[in-house]
Length: 158
Image (tube, rainbow, N blue to C red):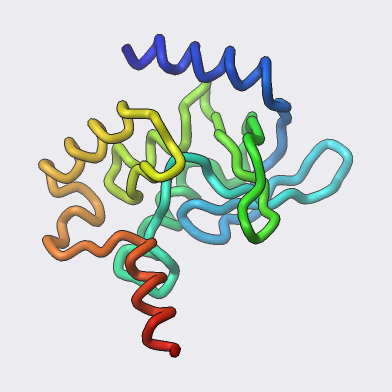
């Protein structure tokens, strides 16, 4: 099933979205990185289908470190599927013989499946497994989803 989804995602991505490669030169947080392209321009990418804890949130530093351990300094392939409200490219990022970074983050328990923008139910299953195994942020019984954390922080600022 995983391989079928992976192949369908790749085929769909190649047909509709642009594929590019770049070297990861900065990790901004668990779900945002900067790549250096072959023309020496930098591009900020927001990972598709995953939402990691914010920098000031519990496990935010852990999520950033996990992402760094996976891809920092490596050449990755990415498929841009759009832009977010901050102008960052939203992308599926692949590394080390086609590992899907968003999948690896959810599987390790360092991010939530971003169900609001994803139909990938494999990520839901991996999140459930990580939660059951108390992996990563799921070790905290009161883990707060990043979208709730941002909303609460915004409401407190009013």
